[in-house]
Every structure is written in C-alpha cells, then in structure tokens.
Length: 465
Length: 73
Image (cartoon, rainbow over all chains, first blue to last red; front, top):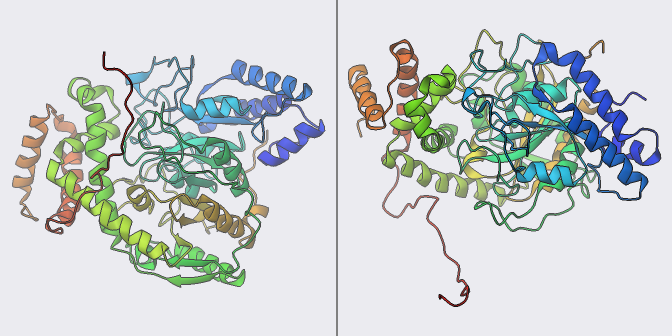
C-alpha cells in the first residue's frame, strides 16, 4: 500500500481495517525522510526509536480494542521549539543546542496521548524569527517545489516535511505568520487558531501576546482533525481561553451557500509588492466561491500599515525582554539575522509599545465590527510566491511580502489555503479569517476552496523514493 | 516625537537606546541594523499622535472575584 498520499482520516481507516499497521506507516515515513531530507533539511532530529515505540504501542492498543481517536497511529513531527521530554529541543540555536526538556509541551503531550507517532523535531528559523540563515547549527529547510527557494518561516521544516510528503501533519507556531507563511509558500494548509485556543505552555516564546500554536497539514480535513486534538483550556497558560470546542469536522462538507465573506481588498491590492498572479488567484477564488453560493463583497478595514506597525512594535520588545540577558552577554552566539532583529527590541520605548497596544484595541474592534456583518474575511496570505534564497526578504519589515501579522495583532483565527500554481511552478494561496473561536467556519470555507479550485486533486512535488 | 529625524539623529538615538539596554552592535552589522531601525522608526511614527486619553491599551485588565484558599495560618 502506498501510504504517502493517505490523509489522516485515510490512514486511520486503513489502520482500523487492518490494511496497514502504525508501524508500517512509521517505517514508510522514516524511509521517505531518509531518502528526501538530505537535500531538503526539514528535520534537525529524527526520533526513529521513539517513532517505532509509539507505533508499536498504537498497534498493540488497537488490537486490544483501545482506540485513542483520529490521531491514533498517525506519524507527525514538531517544530523544534516545542518541548519534548527527554528529546533535545534546540530552537535551531547554538544557545540551546544541548537543551533536553524534562517535560513535554502541552501540545506534545496531547498528541502523545492521542496516540500520535512522533517522527522528530523540525527546522525553524532561530527562535522562530531568525532566518533563513546559514550561520546556525543546522542548515535552513528548502522548499520542495524548488529547492532554490525558501519555505517561508519560521515553521520552515514543518512546511518542507509536509510538502515533501514525509508526514501529513507538523506543528508550527505563528507570531507574525510563521504557520501561514510556510503553508502559503509550500502549497499547504496552515491554521493559526484564535489566540488562547491552543495552549502555548512548553513552547519557547517569541512574543507572548502574539504567539499562537497550530498545525500545518496537507488538507483542511487534516487540520480540523489535528486542531480537535489540540484545542482546549489550559489553566496553566495565562492566555488560554475557557471556551467550548465544537466538532470541527461536523460542518466541513456543508459548503458556503448563504455565507457572507468580506474581502479587505486594499490590504493586498494597494501593496506595492503584490504580483498579478496573486491578484488573479484571489479573484478566481472569489468567483468560484460566489459560484458555490457565498456572498462575497469588498470591505474596508484600517490601513494595513497600522496592523503591521502594531505587530512589529509589540513583537520586538516582547522578544527582547525574553532574550535580554543573552543579548547582552552572548550576542555573537545568535545567528546574524536573529541578532539584528532582536536588538531592535531594545530601541522600542515604553510609549511606543503602549501606543501599539492602543492600536491593537482599535484594530481588533475594527475587525470585529466587520465580522459582525460578515461570516469571514478572505485576503492574501502573501503578496508573491516564495522568493529565492539569494533574494531574501525581511518578513518583519514594512515591505514584507507576508500579509499575516494583522491577525496575530487581533487574535482572530486565520488559515492559509492553497489555490493553485503560479507560472513559475510555485504555490499560490488565500487567507481565510474568522470570528474569534469560530475556526469551524474557517475550515468550512477552506474546505470549499480546496474543492472549487481543484487543489485537492492537485499533486505535490514528486520524488523518486 | 519628530517623525523624520536626520540620519545622524537616528544613529545617535539608536546608540543611546542600545547602550541603555547593554547592547553593542558590531561595526560589521551596523548598516543593516540602522536600515532596519529606520524602517521600524517609520512604523513607530504611524502609532504616535493617534490616540486621545480615553483610548486605552489592549492590556487593560479585569479581575474576577475569588474564593478564600482557607486559613491564613
């Protein structure tokens, strides 16, 4: 059985029918990692013995009638900022190269308890901000669609591992777009859930009030299944929301008939860096959604520049506060890109930061006001396809090609969904934004986008092994 | 705050802010950091002078009643 294209639900069905074992799924995935990763650098650590132990346990439990649910026996991997008990967690940094946590992050624990099979730890931009870089302990992950191009970051290895069909799901984190960016540039689904929906405990922070945990996956259904396992209140995470978690798969196939979708067109259409391919992809998706029964209209939000400014001015001093002591004493142990970004946090004054928090309130209220009239928003994830390694872009600058940070500022759930390929052969995407804690509607629209754009029949890059 | 400082003012300002936080940027990285700071400074300027006294930041917080945890002794 060729297992590399099975969805999470498909793997689950095959496991339960006896067509395949969890051990076989794990061995197949490990074989793909061994064959493909030397050229792609998705993994910083492959946990083969842990994976096989997890898989054999999953098989034994299924045989004994213990079924832990849809992630039971499913291979996955974690961005290397998620603590894993007894397994090195480096943040892709010299500063934590020997760090071995004694506890799992909440996300790692939930996936373990759900019967998942951990294949290993994935490359990231250093401390989820500094990359792509060649002066770190591990090389940067490469984009499987074209290895001369970057994946986007910071969940770079997560994007690579899924696009290269090594695993079907990998965890990322998103402080300014680090889930949605690699998803957009690697042709994947990536959801940043509502702020507080998934516990951040045990995940190395970049910016406490902007950090979100979420999965990158091959499909919307995979994402819904994963978030079902991860979502929920954690009283030990100060940001965690005590809000009931619905059944994310219940409405996936309901279509978009009757839904109202707003398009903040000025966000992307007025941006100097936007490309005709991105504009065309968004307009084509809008036409298809209208054809599927949705009402889609342009809406007005405050200037994109305000969202981007608020996000960066919040992120930089929060990050600097985390790294202050090491920045003062070990600056040269950070990668150059990381250090150059973190030092700017020292240059943001208290008044700057407070004004950014005032902007956060204004901007969140503005997005909520629009979402009072519309069920969701549809906008760009990125203004262009993935750039080359030799033409880097600063994802934090005012000229960033990413369009993701507004919803880190406001906390709304947001998901990047692939919609096709540009003439250069690289993926194009759209971003769907929902009301707070309404990931279900985001999934519902995303599922329809997969169907009407034909992406679900599309192929990922192919490999000889 | 002045929104368009000269490059010299900007450079001096950055030096003071970094020094206050115990940070020394190597000369080889100085130009890159200065360019990024100039861009950040423009973003900071967007947020200044925008709000009146009633515009509160997003981290204004709300307390909930709590139960006693038992005898203080």
